Image (cartoon, rainbow, N blue to C red; front, side, top):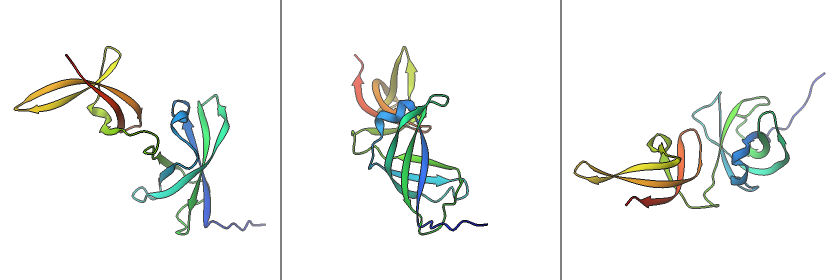
Length: 141
């Protein structure tokens, strides 16, 4: 007994955390990296977003269609996905470790030259493990 599969185009099923659901949409482009090939970025497009939430994990499934002509993706592989949000809002990407959280607000320190710095309050649109996207920056009085 055997199964024949045509793997030129594949679906990647991604878990989207509940707080990230409003940020994604069908048609968004995605970069995929796998454990097996961590240095290769595989491009895909979100084709479907599920209508039900997995309440035990607080995630929702998104289907990503991927051209797998190279044959790198195999059934059952683990992968990480990064969705490109550039078409939704303009934001400045900063390293997440540059953020300071104090008194229920986020701040960054801006160099003014000659070893002088200025604290600025920022609004974060969304963040992942390494990057925060700043949509508003206010100077402190």
